[in-house]
Image (tube, rainbow, N blue to C red; front, side, top):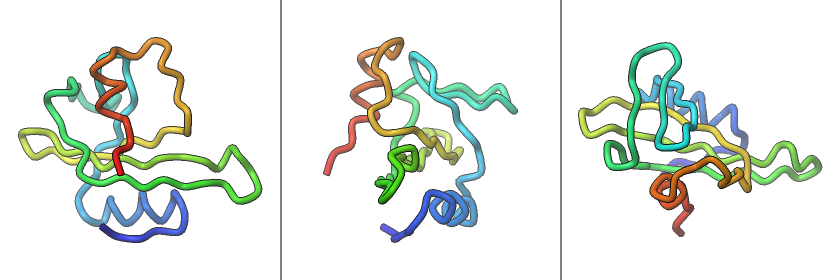
Length: 100
C-alpha cells in the first residue's frame, strides 16, 4: 500500500494509478453520476483504503476507498468518518467496514 499525507494526495495518487471514476455512495452500492455505471456490493472490491484524521479540524476526517469492479473499472469513493448507516443497506455497510 502507498502512503499519503492528505486526502488530496491520495486522490491524485490513485488517479495516476488508473482509479479515474468518481463514485458516490448510494443505499445499495456506489454509482458514478457522469456515466451509467452503478455497482452493488458484490460487483466490486475495495482494493485499498486510506484513512485521514484531521489534526485540528474534525471536518478533515475522511476515508478514501480505491474500488475495482469485477470488469476492471477502477474508481474512488471518498467518505467522512462515521458515515450515517441510515439509508444504507446492510450489505453496503459491511462492504465499507474498515478491516485492519
